[in-house]
Length: 266
Image 1 (cartoon, rainbow, N blue to C red):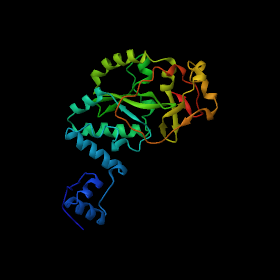
Image 2 (cartoon, rainbow, N blue to C red):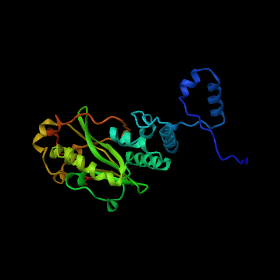
Image 3 (tube, one colour):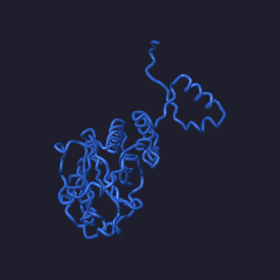
Image 4 (cartoon, rainbow, N blue to C red):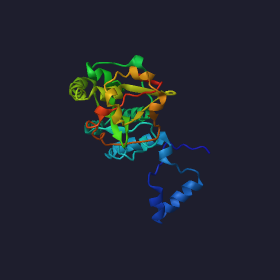
């Protein structure tokens, strides 16, 4: 069928809630399914991104970036956002820039990384080792790093999204984060720097909390490359979060220095 229509109407809602309403919405959903134009946003990445951008434009940014976000529902990495990032993204009015930020976050959470050859390093000291800065439309920097939190009896890597800033404002954030990173123990920093590749994707490292291995906590990560593969568990289940990682300073000094054959130091 030929048509001159250039726009279409998408209706976003909760299927179960709308059907239970026993109103025109129920009829609409049943008709959409019959016509095969009913979609699960959680299974359509492009649709999820479009929803996120639309919610940003409506001033409802907390919806796409909370723990139930469609963007990260099936992601490899748990994603944690700072309040600074939330405040900065709300100030961005350009839809294309917002869309690019959402796209970068989605790709990062699924293990994509920019080529190490293209990495631009402006920070010094510890920040230069840990902090990543990805350009957004050549105007802004999306600033993130790998952090660590404790989940039950395991330590697990997560993505920490610090901020999205104009390039000129980045050095000030570098200074503040440099001070914070200096509070990390050697063991904490080493775990943040570990990198595990599964195919073309970088996946989070997960390792058990083992107080009996406290003497290994300060070991160089390069040394542990010869450790048995069985000493580490890699988990690839989807996990998301909009909250910051829970405190892990009390127990991480006992972190075991174990690793697997595909692990490398950043």
